[in-house]
Amino acid sequence: MPFIDPGNRLSYPPCGAAAGGTPWDIATAPDIASLRLAPENLAVNPSGMVRSRVDLTRKSAASSPVLERNKDRLYVLLQGGGWGAFLAMQIAFSTALRDSTTRGMRDAVTDIASMVMVVLLGVLITHYSRRFMTRWGWKQLGWRALLPRIVVMAALLSLLWSAVGFGYSYLVVGLPWPSKYSPAVVIALTVIDGAGLMIGWLCLYFFYHTFERVNRLQVEQLRLVANVKEAELRALKSQLNPHFLFNSLNSLRALIDEDAPRAREAVTRLANMLRYSLQSGQLETVPFNDELRIVQDYLALEQIRHENRLRVRWDIGPDVPAANVAVPPMLLQTLVENAVKYGIGTRREGGELVIAAHVEGGALRLRVTNPGTLAGPASPAAARAGSSTGVGLRNASERLKLLFGERAALTLVAEPAGCVSADVKIPFST
Image (cartoon, rainbow, N blue to C red; front, side, top):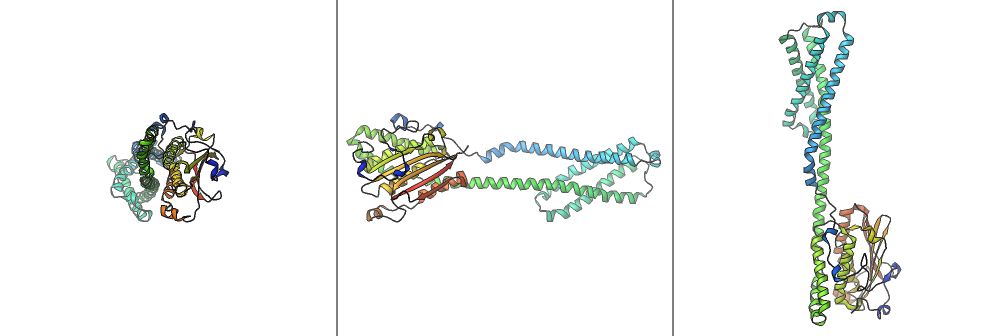
């Protein structure tokens, strides 16, 4: 029994004829590379499926040592460069402002050695002060709570810096006092000047960590959004159960005694669909070629039940096989299943199903057209059979948004006349 009865094809008005294309017999229709459904071509190759999502947690964990090393190198570079520039400025000013009076008290080598000692002391104080600020949790504070702490910390660091520097130079080493002003005045001015320098250092330090914290929060937020989307996607996938399974098994039971070879082929098709469903359940996207083969298997199984009431028109663009677009698994099958269940199954005379796929403007355009309306059930028989709840279409739309964002869309339109079309736009994705 052929999939499409040529003798009865013209006895029913074609639905979606405006979509173009040639009505093909599913038994002789070329597969996506030749649109053939030979039993040896039914199995889906798992290597043809692709994953489209990277495990963010694993990737982040793998790259964290590199980030830590880069942060350490940046800190050493900024610390060395900043204090080195400060030392160069001190030496330049000291050389330019030296007069005969100060030149007689202390030579230039002693001055430079003293400046180097003071700068190295500043490096050590600022470096080890980070441990206390980290232990006290200052990196997690906002600027309103952080600013007074910075002022107090800068004053303490400057006082320590001045005390150790002056004490070592003039009390331990015994260098002559180089200024005409009293030590109390010079030390007080040095503490104030050092406090200003420490405030600048601490502000730069916390600016960097605030920026890093904002970036880290953004990364965590993106990771959380990705995890939520993945959880939603898994939940949506779990709702996409093949409703045709029980009907197919009942049809197979009746077909075993009537046509054993055809029953074996139907079992192969059903096994192929179940295998594909299990394999694609772990994937975000699959090649459109694999999705199309599964739809052909599905339609062949539905033909056993509907016989001549189900007629299919294929309109596959010649550039679709070469494009090999990635699509969500079971997307096209969901649209076709919805069309068969609510567009063909509720009509005694059946109808024509149009499946079109074309590449337009960097995107794959799919259209599945079936007879019907967007209103309520058209007849008591349709009401008894049940009208569409829209769950499958909503799930398909949500999966598209989760994977492709606003670049993808699924719309339901009442065209052409007397028909309902599900239009899908899927962008090319790497």
